[in-house]
Image 1 (spheres, helix red, strand yellow):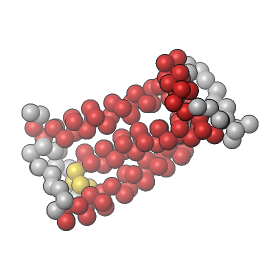
Image 2 (image 1 turned 45 degrees about the vertical axis):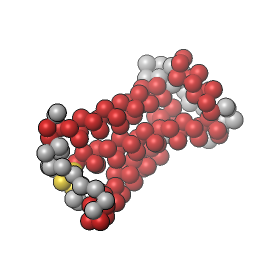
Image 3 (image 1 turned 90 degrees about the vertical axis):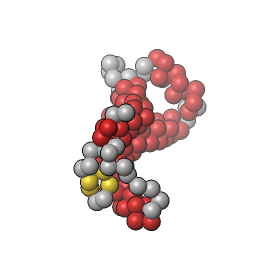
Image 4 (image 1 turned 135 degrees about the vertical axis):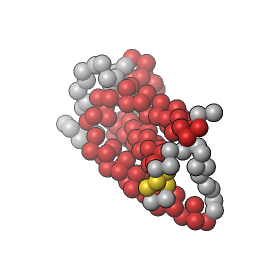
Length: 135
């Protein structure tokens, strides 16, 4: 349908949108923990090409050259690296929020739902993050 942009388009829709939504609603929370998030994402991006290489050699899967941009990094299409980056962000955001609520003794689901619905840490608000580590 989208030719060589197929893989990139689907990846941006299904991995990019959730990461952006998490970032928008938790911006100030994640800004406070940006170093840990960056380290986690870099680990994802560094490891994925090697895991992908093993899967390709073993024949677990293959990439259709008509469906990707044909930019290869360690035998993985660039889309795989972008996917690792986006999923690393989404997972890091979720774990950071979960840990933040847990460390502060708040109920995770109820508090996170409240914060999202009220935009507590959203990008348009000025919010000081106070947790046990910053006290």
